[in-house]
Length: 278
Image (cartoon, rainbow, N blue to C red):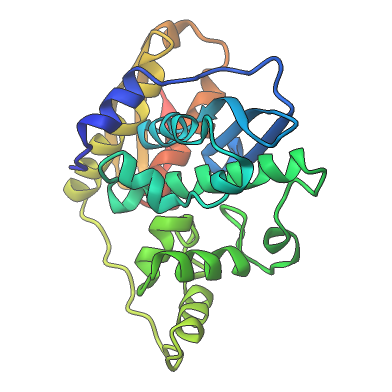
């Protein structure tokens, strides 16, 4: 089970500065609903370049909400130059750490901050690395420049760490070899000639991982809207679930299945899982 600090729990259950900021003059957006995580950061910056107020809207897990919440606390009162020095490591440290599989949430916060300040300066909202980089992970829209930046800033050593910090390779896995080549080049090592195949999960292992993701990532998001979810069956990679509470009456349940339940299970369990509501 992932272990979250008390600060993560507090910021998730009682997020600071949540919601849109009506008088914001800088907005940074990163991620996408299609990828399972999205963050919109609002800033009110004075003419002197001081961040007077900040808020956020996010779609994601507890770590994404906590990272966004603590980021707004960190940047209030700072100048834009001071704020730009804040990294994903600072966000994670302020939360007393994040599970390694959730470090990409802190990276998303850093990227949203940079995008918002670029927006305030009148520069392109998307950093040049994202514009000029070559697409590596099509599942989550991650470029080689984003991967290189994560490797350098966080001293990453393995493909698994790259996935934890960027999500690249966490979907279908077809980009794993390319990630390994980028990593080898950054570490001045010889490229790997072959990668060890992933071990296949037994049905019991698969069910345990599915239950974990439902309990820690999916159920809290549904509970926020008065809903709940129950795992009905796992037959190989075919998963059946049932919605309860407000979710049982929702006409958009199919959207919830695809954009939340199935995407989370594909990211954290296996990339070809299929989810059906009964």
